[in-house]
Length: 204
Image (cartoon, rainbow, N blue to C red; front, side, top):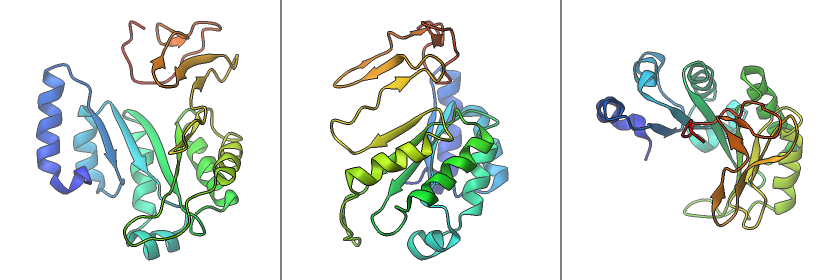
């Protein structure tokens, strides 16, 4: 469920967790007013925001919401904590490669180090469109990589989602059945020293 619908509980829990030295990660659709967002963000270490499409028509017709408030949430959060973006790529609705490129281009205008997750859609409940094709996701990733340093494909079994240093291109985080961070040292690529902007144990 969307955490902002029980905002007061989330805020108080985040405060308590912070006092205990815990990390807080918020996963949200980004549809929240500016004042409560600014009150919450000091207690959030990382936030994953859904940017479900990049047209007001898609948000109005499919999501029954608005795009601009979501964009504003991303822009505000990126100044306060680690931000990642997820876009569910839905067949024949928001799978246009140029549109996905516009999402990536807009994100890069904020920070090209913001990771973008392009998730594969599967039919469920009231939406029966065909599952997103593997080819569409790969093309979408290639287009997004023109603008962003970190782009991942989700819900596609067997696809490489390791993290590579944008500078030397070596693997810094290997993701398979397990996760290995052997390429990270003191928050940087151990091969070339470039900072890798993630939230993790700084002793790594």
